[in-house]
Length: 102
Image 1: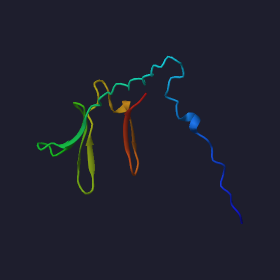
Image 2 (image 1 turned 90 degrees about the vertical axis):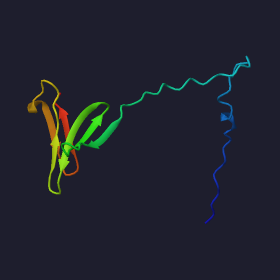
Image 3 (image 1 turned 60 degrees about the vertical axis):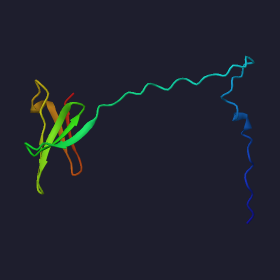
Image 4 (image 1 turned 45 degrees about the horizontal axis):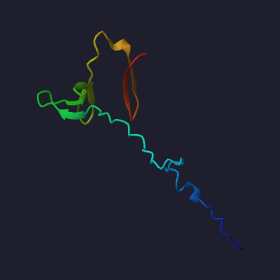
């Protein structure tokens, strides 16, 4: 069985894509990078007074939880004017999702 290499291609036409094609001789400057936005910091801490772990995002408490070998208890403070009927809660073997309807 005889094998031959494929034909090599000449890619030199792409060597000078960044250069200005006009005869002005001025170099074009690349656009500035987009401004970086800093995201709020998320933290997980243990409250020594309650024994609960607290997950915060920025300066907002998202939820608290405590656990034993058999159970996990989550504490979620709802937003103002929201009741249990306003939430969608999905529990599976690997994930817990809590969200607002709508």
